[in-house]
Amino acid sequence: MAKRVFFSFHYQDVIDFRANVVRNHWVTKNSRNLAGFFDASIWETAKKTSDLAIKRLINKELKNTSNTCILIGTNTFNRRWVRYEIFKSIKKGNNLFGVHINRIRDKNGIIKDLGSSPFDFLGFEYSSDGKTIKPIEFKIKKWGYSRDMKPIKLHKTPHKSYWGKSFALSKWYKDYCWVDDDGFNNFHKWVK
Image 1 (cartoon, rainbow, N blue to C red):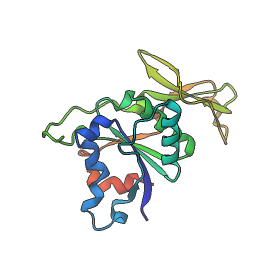
Image 2: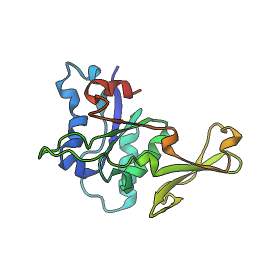
Image 3: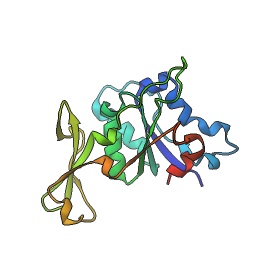
Image 4: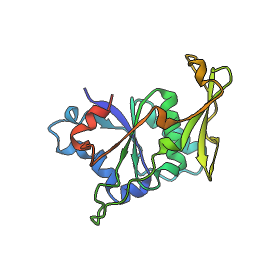
């Protein structure tokens, strides 16, 4: 049965058509069930006037999803709202994974080098008692706390070896490459 997937991306990758290749690949399948997903992401939306309005829109669109796919282009890793969508997806309990899209030819036939994974630039700092985690971000050569996310209370206390330590999200979340990992035929396997 097809799952609802929230796609997170840098809008430049929509302009270049790379994001569209992944989000619309179901069109050439016999059914959406074969594709394994329904798209629940935010397309071009009316410009919002405040950070709170953007957060509310993202939170609303994430509500009925069970998966979040980060479409990784050149600058996706440092986009503020992509970072927020990742942290909110984790807090919600979504299956989270990245898909590199720079090897997809853009509207001009150009292929780029793979972009940096956001999972290498985001992480969590566990409290000294292991009961909460603080979202952290790597910016300008150092780690700091997320300005958009508050500490998250954990439902289950992790092993003591995590307490008081910080970890990048790449410890837990995987990236795939649309071209090298044959996303057209395997995307449904990445969705859980």
